[in-house]
Image 1 (spheres, helix red, strand yellow):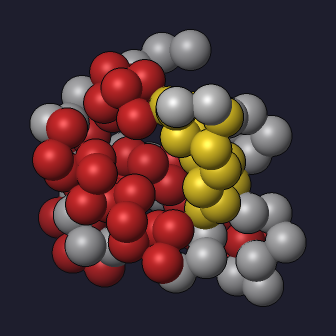
Image 2 (cartoon, helix red, strand yellow; image 1 turned 180 degrees about the vertical axis):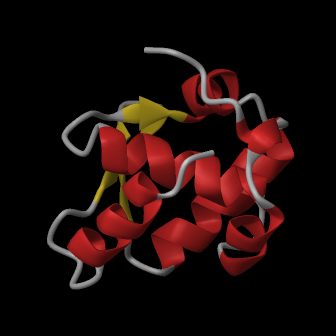
Length: 98
């Protein structure tokens, strides 16, 4: 899986989704909706700092777009495909060229 290059993201979409980290996270979760991700893995894939990824994860989990589950002493994150806005958000995220 290739690292997303959020540095080229248009400012408009970033401000809509509260920043580059949230957009990068949403792109990953929407592109791989059945895959579990760990925090450090998301840091590597998005290219964002740990704090920004943690803050972005808190936002998308609170919004119900991403589910958080514990596996032993680790926490993994996965897209919530049953969220009412999932398909609409998928269409928006995938139609934007970053």
